[in-house]
Amino acid sequence: MNTLDTEDRPEPSETVSSRRNFLKGSIAAAAAPMVLTSRESAAQVPLFPPSPPTQPWVMELPPEISPIEPVTAPLDERAPLPWANVGAGECGRGDHQRFQELCDKATQRGTPPLFYQLRAKQNDNWVFNPAYPPQPVWGWQGSDGQVTAPGPTFFARYGQPVIVRISNELPQDHQGFGSPEISTHLHNAHVPSDSDGYPGDYFSPNKAGPTLTVPGQWRDHFWPNTYAGLDQYGGNGDFREALGTCFYHDHCLDFTAPNVLMGQVGFYLFFDHLDSGDENDPNPKALRLPSHPYDYPLALQDRRFDADGRLFYDQFSPEGVVGDKTCVNGVIEPVLRVARRKYRLRVLNGGPSRFYLLNLVTPDGVGQSFIRIASDGNLLPQPLFDQFSMDLAPAERADIVVDFSKYPIGTELYLADRYIQLDTRGPAKNPSAVPRHVLKIVVDRDPPEPDRSRVPLRLRPLPPITAEEKTNARVRRFVFDRKGVLWTINGQLFDVDNPRVVVPKGGAEIWVLVNKSGGWHHPVHIHFEEGRILGKWIDGVRVPVPPWERGRKDVFVLQPGDGIGTVTRVFLRFRDFEGKYVMHCHNLVHEDHAMMLRWDIAPSTV
Ligand SMILES: [Cu+2]
Image (tube, rainbow, N blue to C red; front, top):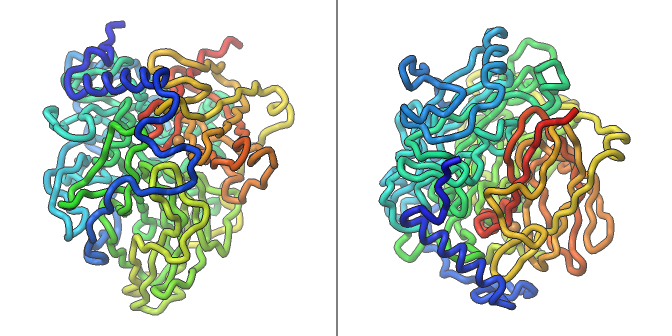
């Protein structure tokens, strides 16, 4: 395969490979971290000056979101193909797996594949807050022509595949942090390897990642919107494996954190016959959860700004920069106006590094209850009533239902964070007594129609795991640690070209995730299929798995222990597709500094 090695990449990528090589060298050379605070130190010292003051509660979020619309697929030489159309400007990706089969099946069902265009573009005049100057972000342009960061939200339906043509129109002469090559990952969706946004699959008009053959202006992603278990369940998959709240984000090798900070994130919501997105659905099986426009995604992202109010980041520091401002859907301290009725709020920690302990509070700090219905985008088997907080590590999601009908018009509430976090190692043990408000919610109207939505006592059942499956599962152990100034898994850095683990297609395994890096939290994300936590141990003592972690998850938060460390056992299946995937720390700073592992699904020999 004619690959372009990272060593061949021109500026700014040469800087990267030099950085990587420099840091690799420093592992052997440096017995102790050079620029870092001691990893054993529990002290939290701010490494960077705080962001300048902002003007809170001035910017308004739109009262409802508008999903991206599909467009007509071109019928000319740029028509979507299962293989890379390099002659028409596509980068040299792998062939789409099961493309014809899944598209034909969907067409027979009366839901033929949809085609979308998503263009990564710079918006020169993004306003994070009125106190800061308009400045460039790397957003997405969808069907409405606006370039926004986060990008447009997809409403996807299980059983109806999509082909998303992502074009890279970012300024290729970019200076500063971030690198204008992209590889877009649809977080944990059941997606074939060629469309998973593998870190080595980054592309631009003149650069190709090491796992692509040639550069290109654009790239088609085949997202089949299929449940896991295609081959076991008559080609349709297992509806118990559905995702709901999902997001797409850049996964470019070495540059995920700065590229995500620059804006390369957007929501992707899945619906099916149960979670149908219609609270008036006459289908008796439909859950009828609060639906659009009362279904609202909220992406929280930590960012830091310099003295002039410009986005700041140090991409060469293996400790990165923790943001002290929390953007909600791209703006700081915005207002969301809601009607007096139930809402489904889909809260995403979009990273890169901050953890949140979120409460819904009155202006004088009184906690308000809500119902939690999903973790990491997966509906729980039963709703959790009377919840007051959500603990969200980078990439974790919580779907909650809040009933605003109990508040009079004019009520003001806040979504507030109570974690204290001064660096990227994770939050301090004791949360703050004083909540930090990140979003103001104003109950400002009665709904125009009666609220027929509900939260049923049963949501989505969990797929069973048999005792036999657990007994037969191969067990692998992965230790997340630190070596010199970089981050490692089982003592090794990320190797983009070679799998460290090869699993058989159709198999099931137990992965034991161990955190020995004293003081550092690692929210570990395993691509492809959701896992189930079988058990957790802190310093050798088994601890209960909280109810919101007892469903399917794709992020496993490895907290630090005070002694020998923490252990989480996860049951995973690997079905339907083949090829390369990754497991990595979703503290994007750790990911960029090599805490990532390539694992491949090999064809089943059975
Ligand atoms: Cu980490």
